[in-house]
Image 1 (cartoon, one colour):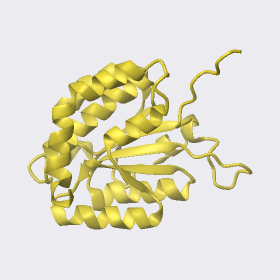
Image 2: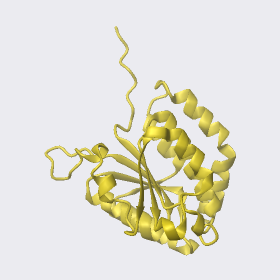
Image 3: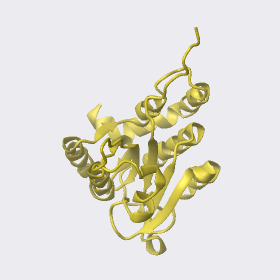
Image 4: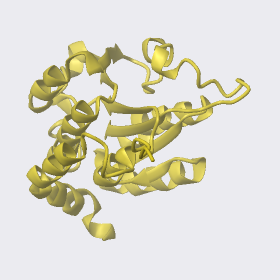
Length: 216
């Protein structure tokens, strides 16, 4: 009897990296921890061949995506499906929303099957919130990675996460989402992802303590 191939738990995952820019470094609470989680997510997404969508907010004024993430975006290569500068707060802009990865996920379709979108970046209560709400309205499943989002004022973060839970988003952690993408230890990339998790264990602890320490 032939053993069926392992089935991935997520069929159409995507990663959103929201406005992790140089000019925000001095003002965002635990900004360095957001970078750590974003870096881990990019490495895992590259290994799992997950499409990556990146935005900046008013790039000429606020700068490019931080230098720490640039090598990992470069390593992801063609997996980076969009790198869009914007003035609108939401990432759900036409260059992204019209991408083929999302094309068959309209809520009006007979059998909508949304993508599973993980969001990291800033600010929790502004761009992350508006992106998540737009994705939910478009019929997608939204996962806010609590160890990878922040705001200028720490107190804004918890309020934003509570609101997004009520709106239907899942608030989770980067490691949980990465393992849920796989769903089965028999998939070919499993050992590689275990290596990523082991290599970043210090970063994970630092991010969890820094961004979620008061709630743990």
